[in-house]
Image (cartoon, rainbow over all chains, first blue to last red; front, side, top):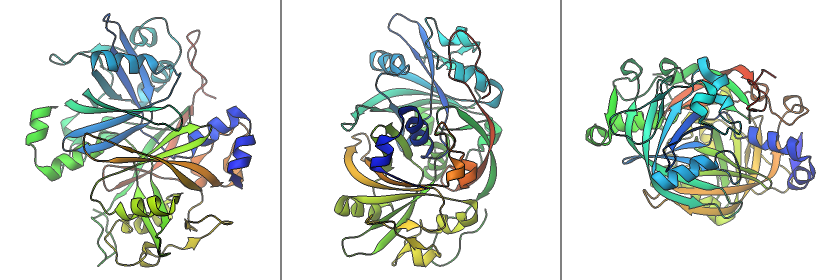
Length: 207
Length: 207
């Protein structure tokens, strides 16, 4: 089937929201942990997480206007620190539940445990296996619709030693990381292959 | 194991590139098709693709400085149109191969077929099942490292009718979409569950 800009615009709002949220494909999934100025912890799920650079190590998160994620954004702009915690299948329901409009910390509300590393000033999720602490570096405002891309620099990275290969590649299956799609669907991943660096001289090979 | 900003900075470049590219989790994967001013087709793989908004339907792609993807960026800025084509397991090797430094169109070099819809001025990939045509709307420059986020508005969306649920959710398995990790790893996804809209009053349920 073919949708045009016009037929998309005329489609029902909820339908279009699900459709357009689905068509970027499978997404990252992580819980972002923050502290408010008053010291209250906050936790919220994000799937618009992108690799921005390796040197220095930078990560980007896109924030939507007027969503539950706004507490997270306010906290980051106030305190400048946040954590990114991969979600495991074991606690996918709890992770999803953090997206509700809670009047208390999502950690206690959803049964996830706070964890702190060294002097890093934001809460990690103990149940998560691959997690990182980031410091805010930059905010970019998307003029087209008011979303905001927040760039963070990785200050602390915690992950299982046996998941890291000799070349630095991380076996996400060993960290238990899952992936998401649309607004509410969760998937485990099954490896097809790693492929060799692409050159015009020969077809890529499985490595 | 724990990495700090300092130990990351001191790690070997290739190791750090693989490591940091891995830790955002599973990613979208699509081939971006463009036309140059001279009418030459170009195709390149991207995994930093994010949902920006549903109304209007907006998608973002992050471009790295000095990569093979620059032809794509130049073409988009010149012609203002591009296509995003999901990758199937069937042609994952060909898709990966488009990342090599070709002196000719990646379509013919890698054995992928051009397809055109209506009057849309950029090439689609015939082998892809879920694909969309976008018009450039905005460019955001990341000051921290010179990467650029390009925002495109969806003008045309092609996907299998039986993959679209009555609520608009797209079953990506029916479109054959795969996911990627790191710089060179590809995965198929297996559904865990869709979960109900999260409310504080009860635990989310499988829908």
